[in-house]
Length: 229
Image (tube, rainbow, N blue to C red; front, side):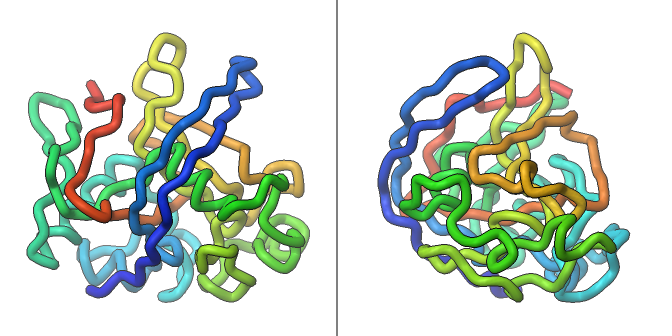
């Protein structure tokens, strides 16, 4: 299964969290990101099943947990003869340093790629770039039907939320992971480049999917290296 990737240049971004009233700068090395969320056709070809409630081969796969997304990344890597990015051992998921396989983008990588150099809340006019409550209230839509951002990425906002690697706040939410981008059921205020939500890594719902990334070189582990289930 081939995945269409684009190269994202190195840069920096300032992340913000309104709940915690914090902001912090992050340097983002160059990496590659899938041009669209993983489709149901792609997921089924790799995993042998299709859990989506909004059925359609070219629609984003939905109803997948963070753990499902991790399993997909490893399975896709094996299919392409790459070193899997994750190791599951003793009820933990750990990143594999130096792996060249697929992984979930970090929180910083995701927002940096979504903004594509824009400082605006969105990288374009909402109806031109995203499926959301205002133009589709009946489920997800086939990928890549709206305008891409300046990096050539489709559906970064709207259609389905997308899982990221990072734990949100271990002290308060334990193992909860971040997801980004807004979905087809969200109103305008939910579909913003800076919005983040979080949930347990086993959580799955019909407006939540994911896209995959690869490092330009060997994978460098993020500070959040493990998950205890």
